Amino acid sequence: MNAPVVIRGGTVVEASWNGPADVLIRDGKIAALLKPGAAVPDPAIRTVDATDRLVLPGGVDPHCHVGFTSGEFTSLDSYAECTTAAVFGGTTTIVDFAIPRPGRRPLDAAVAQRAKAGEGLCDSALHGCVVEWDDTTADQLKTMADSGIRTIKMFTTYAGESMANAHTILRTMQATRDLGGMVIIHCESDAIIVDAQTRAAEAAGVDAAHMACTRPEIAETAAVAEILAIAESQNAPVYFVHQSTAEAVELVADARKRGLVAFTESVAHHLVLGDGAYTGEGPERFVCCPPLRSAEAVEALGEHLFTGHITTLGSDHCCYDLDQKQVHRHDVRHMPNGLPGVETRLPVIFSRYVHDRGLSASRFVQLSATNPARTNGLYPRKGSLMPGADADVAIWDPQARWTAGVGQLHQATDYTPYEGMALTGRPTTVLVGGHVVVDRGELVDDTPRGRHLEASPLDFREMATGCIPAG
Ligand SMILES: [Zn+2]
Image (cartoon, rainbow, N blue to C red; front, side, top):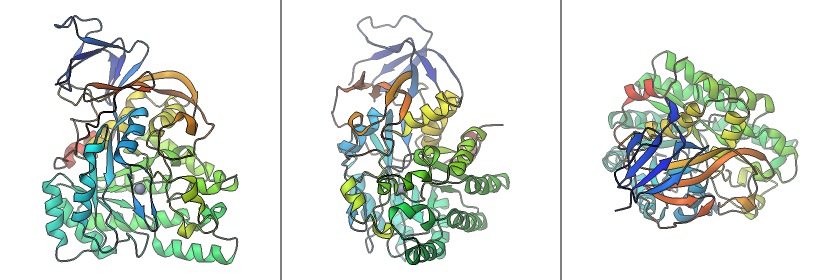
């Protein structure tokens, strides 16, 4: 078993409070929070200094694609590589996806992806995925739930690849609801997008510079409205991934007021980057779905970090490199969608929202660790530093100034969409299961100790009250 550790001199930040405390770690778990300077029984205990630092529960990234194949492209990282980048960025749990290739069973995809967890430097959980309902789907979902895979990803777009029709979505919502799980869904109306792409191809073009107009905001609004109606008809909980507009977020907030258990995830790039990126050099570096939105839309979306309407913060990490992004630079319909971001999720949002705009550190932890743990059935084992939790800790320097750049990062790709961005705040030392893995910016332990985390049945009453801050 691993040696005990005490983290001294820092400010512990939980979702619901923060204050000075020392953190005692034993057997890979948080053993106690102590009065600063309190004596500990074992004088030989290892001390980690956190003076002038925030002591955060390690981040939980609810949306992270590892080695993901879509169309002709597979994203480039292994579990070892993705989790190495994650821990450098202060994230100590990732939730990956098992998205079946056309014709493959969801359960088989899940079993294959789950087997990779042991290569990780940190723990991981998994979302399943249903594309087409058939006679075996209910049994497959039951088997997945029994092995702790309770959140099921669905898509309203990408016809012929991963898109599910409304019948399939409704039946999957019924089944996951009854299994203590929920559907998590990518909402963009495929009909509106195909039409917008067709019209763009005939006019301005479908190269990356025209990305924004090929996937208009109304495509997202339309799909969110339809999915909310299906969820309400079944009283089924639903979680919307990467909501990119305030309008979409507000539809979900309104449904919550009517009593539906519904959650909004927003991802870092939609909160920081605008569609001006598509008019600059190398626009294919920013091709993601939904696309980056206007500066005004980014501003309006960011407001909902403060209102509480955004439940979780994800990365939607997809580790493609420039070669892959540029093969079809003249046609976004064939480009690999997605941006690398598992390592930058926390620093970018901390800098732009906590440092620059006064978002509270507790709300930052709630969005980036505690709520993702809750919505994935991992709380309070993850997303908290209360006694009994896994000792996954990010010791954070809130004043560190640095410039994001691919040379500073550890993701298995040759670019970052944040290249050259001046940032304030970053993790310095990161513990995983009580082991110091990153120390003062260096990887000091690359032992793969990753475990597949089994999601507990979701407690929707606890989630509905716990995830949404009052006021
Ligand atoms: Zn995604």
